[in-house]
Amino acid sequence: MCETNPAYADALEFLCIAPPSYLATFSKLYVLKLPLPKPIEWLYLIGGLLLTLHYFGFQDDSFVFFRYVDNLIFLKAGLVYNRGEYVEGFSSPLWLMLLVPLRMLHS
Image (cartoon, rainbow, N blue to C red; front, side, top):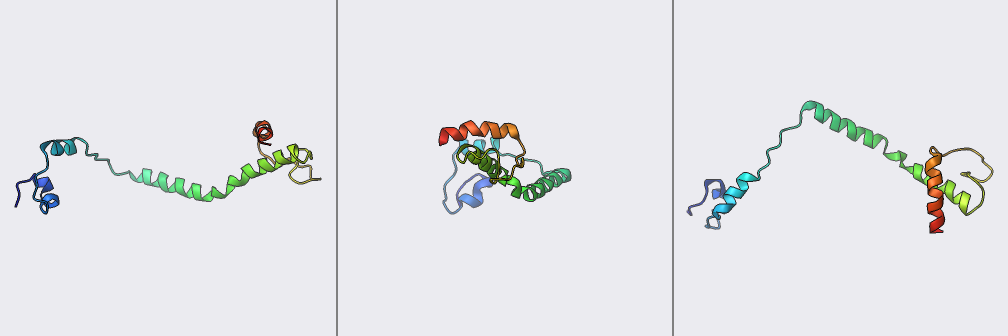
């Protein structure tokens, strides 16, 4: 059997080589020992994941804005989702007005 550092004996036994001395020092300096999460942290993680899964489907709101902007710019129908239905169906007028010039640049 080779003379190796006892910490590396099992890993290097089949190679029968000794690791360089700087490797042992390097591995001791950069070993991260993170504490286990507390129960409240696990609860927050699980709660956050459940909220993410629950509200995942509400990301279609951006397409509502895009349709309003397209109807305003290209169809000249005004701020409507469908022609003839004059309902304010967007949730943020400021965001809508910011999208209008950006969409006009693209057209």
